[in-house]
Every structure is written in structure tokens, then in C-alpha cells.
Amino acid sequence: MKIRFLFVFFLSLISFTSIAHADTLQQQIDKTPAGGTLTLFDRDYMETAVIKKPITIVGGEKTVLMSDSEKPVLTIENTQQVTLKGLRFLQSTSAVAVKKSKKITLDQLEMVQMFSGVQVYDSEQVMIKGLTLRGLDGQYASKGYGLAVYRSEQVTLQNNNVTLVQDAYYLEKTKDVIVKNNVATESRYGLHFMYADGIKAENNTLQRNVTGIMLMLAKNATLRHNTISIQWDWNSSGFTLYNAENIVAEHNIFSGNRTAILSQTLKNATIRKNVFSSNQTAIEFTASDEDNVVTDNDFVGNILNIRSDGSDSKIHHNYYDDYDGTDLDEDGMGDTKYVALQSFGQWMVREPAYQYFIESPSVVLLNRMDQQTNKVEQNQLVDDTPVIKPTSNFSERQNTIHIVSLLFGLLMLGGAIYLWRKGVRIG
Amino acid sequence: MKKTWTASLLIAALILPGCGNKQFEARGINFATDICAICNMGISQEPYAGQVALANGDYEVFDDIGCLMTYYNKMDQSDIGAAFVKDYSGDDWVQVEKAIFVSDEAIATPMSYGVIAFQTKEEAEAYIKKEGKGNIISFDEVKAIDWGAHA
Image 1: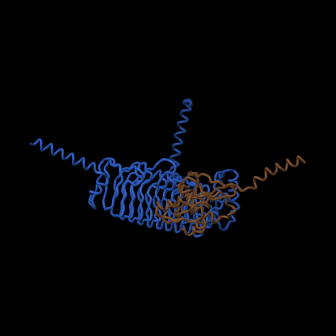
Image 2 (image 1 turned 180 degrees about the horizontal axis):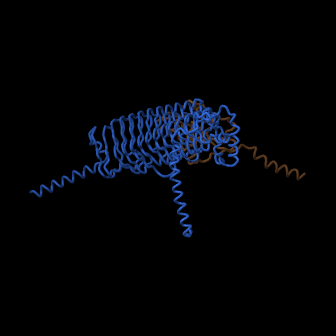
Image 3 (image 1 turned 45 degrees about the horizontal axis):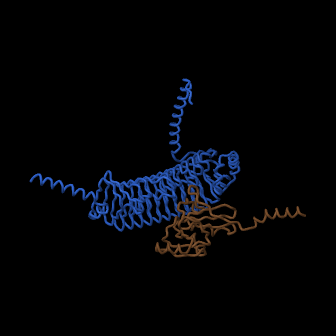
């Protein structure tokens, strides 16, 4: 009797477990009460599901979600207070879509080999944090967006890392968006804002994209403390500010970009306290408004510092490493003005292919002649108060890197001498 | 006399071909290097692309029909050889004068101008029926849109 009881009890246990385990994702969601928490099993879920009630879904250590459908694996719609945490998505068209919802949190999601990641439509109070997304190899045209937000308000994207997609973070017709501490690499655009109002993009690292931040038809944006480097493709730029107004770009570091800030029909922008280092062109103004201000920036090691198509702007109190003036009264500012105007730079704005001649002997000679003749320039691209010392500590950090390089070089040289003395032949 | 005739024929053969109308053809999009001449965006979605073959032999490409028309409207028409839009299927280029346009705010395009193009009226109508949005408009109506006010 006892054995029979134990057998039945054991069987019922197995049956119960296997039934629960066999539930589809949608069934598990449906069984979880509103406001409850669903912890997923450590298994693969090959399906799509829809969430229409407040719920928290937590992934197990080995939970994998995927789908061969065109639809997102998870769709959250017409609801509020949904949290997805620690879920892993694999090889699908799209991971999560949020539609007409409020108070949504996506926390620590991982996505691998995805066409696109998250799409948010017509929603409010959305927080996406700690997400990692790796897209697909190949042309940008054959990929989707990483995190895309449309017609939504009060959205925060924080501590996310997106690579190998078309646009890492795409925001269209959004209001009051905070984008901070994110990383975007190997994509077409790092951050892409269109028709956006009220943007804060801070402490983001944007590297090896076609364009770091693409700000189009947007207004009231603050772009601060971002690190923008190695946007070096043909037509690349650190920031492209197109048809934008009321823009503040400050405390950013631009290094190794084709054009650090490319602006077109830009109105009422302030570009201050940034470091422009080793870019081909630091700032380019095209058809821009004269109310744009460039002040307190450091221009170090760029081929061209500022160029324009004739658009004027207020330029003052910047540091230029190629300024050759003096400071006899020791007020920290040069005694003569700095003229950024260069004939070749201006031509390059109109005909980008000229960039291939930039260090040719004739262009170098032309630039030297410009430096002499431009001393009479009164208006265009003139800084009346160039500062003598850099305003940031960027140069000190650069020196540290150089010392490391020097030590490495000395080590290699010592090794080479040692091999030579030993009479070792290579090849 | 015979030499004069021969020389005249040769000269005519050289000069007359240049008197005909030059045929302008669309070129393919290079996704790696082509950017829109108006908004600087890369061309990543062919169904919305456009291009202008300039009379001098150059080309300008556009990511959105709105950008194409912004450029088209501000150019001296004698400088434009031909203008093309991509059929919404993304397969063929169609001359703007021959294309059938469908417009609706809700049609998502790269710059959100909301205008797409088709080769035939039947295809345009099939799209409107399937998607439940859009109105057919002529090229003259497309030209008349105030594209600059879109922002």
C-alpha cells in the first residue's frame, strides 16, 4: 500500500512538472495574475507572445527566447507596469515591441544575432537599461534598428550597448528623452534623432559608426560629455546637426573623426568646452545661422579646425594648437586674432573629393599663404580672443598615452639591438 | 568635288549624333558611399530612394522622395537631365513624370515625408487597398507640395 502510494505520488509530481514545463510562453503569461511575477524555465522558447496586463517576467539562467516569425518575440500593448528582466533573445527578427503602453521597464536584456532589438510606439514612461544587442554582419541596408522609439514621451535609454545594426538608437517624434551611458559601435548611426523635442544625450560612447549622433529636424537638445571617436568612413561625422535649433553641445570629446561636427541649416546652437582632437575637420557650417556660438573649445591636431560655406558664426575664446601669436600682456589670450579661414578648406566643403589632396605640397603651400594673407580678414571664421593654453586637461591625458608608447618603443628598440648583436637573421 | 563630299559626310557623321536628345539613365545605389544630397542620410532603404541625373553627367541621390523634390524644385530645370524614383518594390527606377505617387502622413519613409511611388496605377491601388491608407497624387501635385515646410 505504501509503495503504491509513493508510486502514485511520484507519478503525479512528474506529470505536474512536465505539464508546467510544456506550457507555451503565452500560456504561462496568461496563467500569471495581473501584477504577478513570472519566472521562465531554463529552456528555449520558440514562439511569439503578447502581454496585455501588468506583469514582471524574469528569465532563468538558461532561458532563450526566439522566433522565426516576422513579429516581435514579445509584444507589450495597451497596458502598463510591465517589467522584462534578464531575458535572452536569439536569432530573431525583433525581440520586443511596446505599443500604446505606460510605465514599461526593460532591464538587462540580451540580444544576439538579431535583425532589430526593441521598438516602442506611442508610449510613455519607458525605461530601457542594461541591454546588450549584437546585430548581424553585412551592409547597413540589410539590418534593422537597435532600439527604436516612435511618438513617445519620457523615455530613458541607459547603460545599453548596441553593435552591428543600422541605427543603434533611433528616436522619432519623441519628447523628453534621456539617453545616457550608452555605447554604440559598428553601426550606421549611433544616436539618430528625428523630429525630436527635448533631448538629453550624456556620457555616451560612440565609436566606429558612420555618424555618431545624427540630429535631424530636432530642437532643444543637450549633447554633453559624450565620447565620439573614429567615425572615419567616407561621409562620416561625429555629429551631424541637420535643420536643428536650440542645440547645446558641450564637454564632448571628438577624436579621429572625418568631420567632428557637421552642421547644416543649424540655428541657435552653442558649441562649447569640447575637445576636438585629430579630426580631419573639427567643425563645418553649411547654410547655417549666424547665431551659432563656438566658444571655449580646444582644437588640437586637426587638419582643418573650422570651415564654412560662407555661413557666419560667433567664434571666440577657443584654443588652437596652430595659433602662432603671442601673449605679451599675459592675460591668457593671444595678442592677435586667429583666422580659421582656409581657401582649401572652403573648397573642400563644396567638393568633398578634394580631401584626398589635403596634405599635398601645393595645398600645404596654399595654407601657409593663407595664414599670411588672412591676417587682414575681419569677419569670417575669426576668433578675436584665442586662448594660449588648452581649456581642458585633454592634452595631459594624451601625454600619458605617449609615455606608454615611448616605453613600448624603447623596449622594441632594445630587443632589436639585442637580436642584432646576437646576429639573429629574420627571414 | 568627291573629296569635299567625303569630308562633309565625315564631319556630319561626327557632329549630328550630338544634336539628338541625350538619354539619361538611372544608376545603381552604392549603399556604402551614397548619401542624400539634401539631408546627408545614407541611402539604406531602396523603396523610397530617388535620384537626379544632371545635364552635365553628374548624379545626385536622395533617401526620400521629399528630399528629391526639395532638390528638384530649387534647381534650374535646364540643369536636370532626368529625375527618377524607385518603384516601391525597390526593383526598378521610374522617371518622375511617369510614376504614380501615393501620399499619406501614416506612410513611413526615411524622412517621414510620407510619399511613395509606383510604376502603374494598378500597383498603387493595390497598395492602398492592402494597407488601408494613401491617396494617389500626380507628379504636378507632388511638385506643388511645400516640402520645406514639412519640418
